[in-house]
Amino acid sequence: MKPLVYITRRIPEEIIKPFEKDYEIEMWDSHEEPVDRELLLEKSRTADALVTMLSDKVDQELLERAEKLKIVANLAVGYDNIDVKEAVRKGVQLTNTPDVLTDTTADLVFGLLLATARRLVEAQRYVEEDRWKNWSPLLLAGTDVHHKTIGIVGMGRIGEAVAKRATGFDMNILYHNRSRKKGAEERLGAVYTPFDELLETSDYVVCMAPLTEDTEGMFDHQAFKKMKKEAVFINASRGQTVNEEDLLYALQSGEIQSAGLDVFQDEPISADHPLLQLDQVVALPHIGSATKETRYAMMELCLENVKLHLEGKEVQTPVSE
Ligand code: DGY
Image (cartoon, rainbow, N blue to C red; front, top):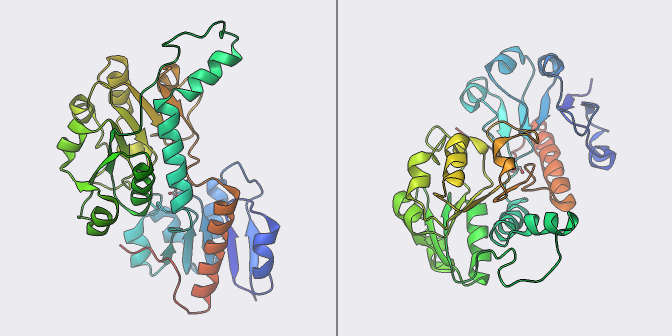
């Protein structure tokens, strides 16, 4: 009997084709809707491998049922949806998809930063709503990006790639991270800065920190209060790093100027979300790594990791505790 690989979303046939000879591959029958939780729990009992999305909870309940499960390959670089401790305790190998999405995600972060600073979405709405009647000197005037200070919180691979893009805009680059990144300091001129000082001095505060116990809710009232009134806040890591009520207050009361958000506390959000009611918010539906090239590379990497592990070989991108 071939090992069973269960994939929690419908992915293109051409990706799974090369693996079908050796594996029984089953997929949830939608590429949009998340897998039904009960079905996922049932599949976890019989599957040798799971390919999961960041919206699937791989928690104790699931891992307890997993009798044959050897590997969970998560289609994301972040793995806060997984109870890593419990998986390690059960001897289940975990993998994620770093590297292949670094540049793509950094491109999106920079695009979001530019869109927020230069009010691109508002400008599009302005034209669409037929409000463009005249040119005027301060019509939809935004904020410069070039030669300003960017403060990157979370200087992992994507943070560094954002910093690299910032050098092209002659930005002054500050960063905050659990550990110093000497390489980034030398290559990009990024300056390690204590968190509070980064908040106080940056024109653009960019959150790229993974969601952990330490980073959960780190952008709260205290943090926003320390930022400049003209500050633009960008979040493309995880929504739970931000206290959204505090962000809303900071935007409404003018503590900060605007926000570009690719992630939210409770995804997906609906159109009546309070942050969406503000003109100075640019909101995206968690599309950091969403290009065809990168999503294909991520899916292939997941299946490659599954194959390697089921063949008793080292996986390419392990997640450890
Ligand atoms: C990730 O990979 O963790 C991203 O959030 C997906 O876009």
